[in-house]
Figure (tube, rainbow, N blue to C red):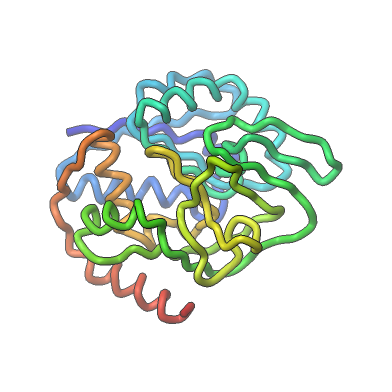
Length: 250
């Protein structure tokens, strides 16, 4: 078995160890005898998004958002089409904000986003920083239990983002904030979830702290439309780390 991964704009979007998400994804696949090929699409490249099983875009400095959005305009229709077909996507931090409907800048100007998620962001001088804990939405909990071969349905990470992100009427969150700010610090939502696409503000990197979520993405990348049982791994230390941090935040 082989998975093709696309890493979008690692030359400008790679803050807070976000590249570690792909390292974790790749290693957990290799431990199961699954090969993972990672291609990088750099700023200005024209890539064939349709040929991938998993697409990843990380976080970056706010100063990069206009530059990246200009490049995203070229591939946004292909990203949307890939997600509609069931391709797995993970967007973290600024990458998540860029894939929403739009970003309203500090000066009031509105910059269209890629439109993958039914969400929008309003920038200001506020900042959400610190450890964060969330309970995933009910429709994801059973999937996480099966993929991770355990009963963990929470996610932990470190958030560091400016502005406020809101889900529109059709938008679904990744989870409900137990500790931390989340999307906007007001409605306790965190991230977004649409089909096999996931957006979040959890850095850390996210998949190192949440192996059950890594395995969910891995299983979906292998078979987007069907449930697939992954060979269990010895995650004693990963689970201990997750639960220790969870106890600290409760």
